[in-house]
Image (tube, one colour):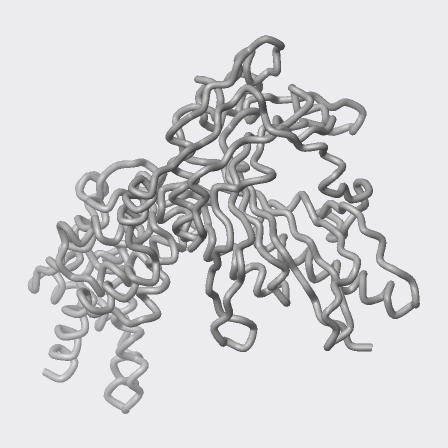
Length: 477
């Protein structure tokens, strides 16, 4: 039997605020456990929560950016369940009335056609702590740094039909939230986490199958791989005549398989009721419209502007604007270097390759847009070759020094003196008479060999274009 895949995603996004949701503890990633805590986020009795207004504004911005209807009146509930990292024994969340609902996000399906994915709700809640397990697996400790961090949860309807669609949805959602300054969306620090609900049903059926929930996925690639694995597992179960059990599974990266964690909880299991210690949230139409007007330029609009204003190819513009930080880097570079295509080529190519290799975020790289502009100007002025520029880029990223400092210290200035190069060329011709004879015999590759020998003799510092010109002149003279 042929089956259709049905996927819905629940994405938890930490909001970019200075303090936590209901106390004044810092909201920033910390390597040392339990340093960003107080009696409030540790769940001590008698401590009253105080709402973070900026967190509500960020949540409103996210809901508007995702085309949601906004609830002018909403409130917080207590979601009750026991887990070691939930210090109070309940989580403050919005169960009954989310701040945003009935939104959508458009993306391409597997056939390249435009598809609308419905977003059922965007609600606010506080984050829980984090369990830290010992390597031996015999001890677990709790780090409460994350407890009380403001979150939004973005929940789709079951509209996704493949792991590829799920991955593209997450990539676009991340872009929107970053462009909106709602979150930094750094999965490695836990500021964006995804749970996936997946089921299979016979093709043509309108009835949803029994679903499982996937957790513990630390990258978009892991989401895609875990969904692919679960599709195969559920298909095998259904083809054998058995029923899929509704469970919560975790993705095990090392073994590339899903492992059962527990039976899947239902909404009634949480016994949600209105939090009596927090006043309702009352927004005005004016506040909502002001937030809507303040939404920033998103990736698609920015890409279109890059094509129009900077004459970039559509592909280049899309790559640059996929990341807000990379697009910001590009435009900061152009503020002092007026050659968009050259800047685009270096940023998309050499610069991004080194960031990916080192695992460095653009906004944390010591090679600033000013450094990039300085490097490109040195190439344009003939001070260094493109090959030497790559070496300078490597050294600058490693040391934090400017390109000009490195070129001066390492004496990397390109040799463009005619007399000096002619002397070296005559030396190479004298040392390689066979190559000269081959060139005159019509073997043009011999010219490339001689150019290479000159570059080797000058340790890559010779102006390659000038070397070609002078070598041809000498050989033909």
